[in-house]
Length: 414
Length: 169
Image (cartoon, rainbow over all chains, first blue to last red; front, top):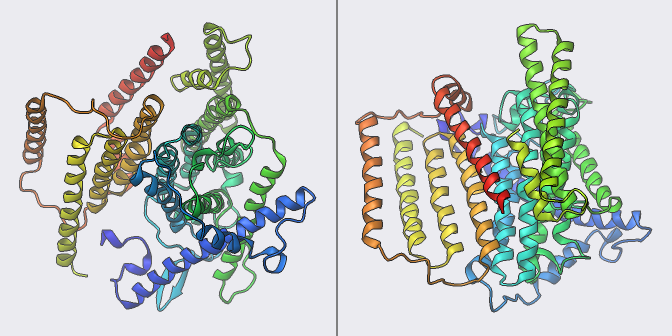
């Protein structure tokens, strides 16, 4: 039954209890994500307030925890405007194209289960099942595909508004997201090499018992992934999309009311799902010490959320402390630093893997790889410099954004 | 669920997807708005991905979304947005030589259909046609290694060519 091979519960046929499991999971993930977004917005505002010596939201509910709900209700009752020059159909479609991928990514994230001393399954209604909505064999590719599909919402929102400010904002945003997707995918490949599978469940299972990819793959892929993810999320210090000092408001300038709220929701939802993906890929997912024998899966849920909140804290911390990059710096970091670094690291890990299979000397493999990587790096630098000299840019350090993209290109051939 | 009912369900879903794809393809060539045309192309390619998934080819289906919808059309849209930002219909999207276009389309369809019939004939696909990522990669890197390498070199040449063309200006 190829179609139903998403979860062990569905293997023995699809009856009432399986349908119940499916419904509980879908509704649970949906509700969890919405509540998490609500709390995340409050968490971010409160924390940034704290770091800037302010109080932050304090009126609605205890500690202002209902502030997001109040804002949501307010936005819901505002007038929904559509600019006269906009493209009606695409303008209405765009918010959903950015919200739906944000929702779907979460469906492949394992949020619980005992991976330390078990295989991560729980038993519901006599069926053993995973604590994730679906476990497709190509789970992590699905995440990548959805994150590249999320560009559509931003791109079409800017274009269909019929306003040049929106268009400029969306061109910036989509150029940034496309550039950083490459680094994201390459650093992820190191994890896939380690786990030997594309399924998120298998990736988490391979990390069981403290074999977290964070250190198993040698820290570099995790760092590259976090930086690229921050850029992919358009969050500070990569928030050129909504740079308050430079732009009117970014790609959603013309949006108001509930459609604006949908973009806002998608943005914060992406932060949560991306953190969940980082936990899954590098921090062992729900792996952690199991403190009780009974209901051991509950500790998986606990550790998953502890890691998730730590990552969310990190993203808020970035926002409160790091200054924004300039546009050419953004492109330089992505094309000339992150992509070569993650590519070189992937080759190193691959060589080590082959060396282990063939019984080569590990130290020699590392030395050869580092030497080759250094040589490639020097060549890359020379290519970039000669490219700059050709276009007469070397003296002019502030290369404009278009040149930065062009100069960054040749390394793919080297 | 028995194998029979599963096959029936697969057939129903196939025809629904196929009808949507034909509609999107027709609108793609008849619409006068370039961005709308690109979005209809997304619909067609999404349908192709759905058909792959229906056949159990998960890796190919998701890769179809990743490459075509996530990269190729995005670049199309990027080009459109950077060069012509006017919203609304355009006059120049139509071509005069409709007969030639129809003939070319029929010729391509004929060649494709002939290839499929010549290649597979009456061969029946089993109920479980699922191919795993490992199988796909095994066949690419063993049986089809020469075409794979040839395509890689071709793409590299295209990449370098694009840079050369872009830098001259």
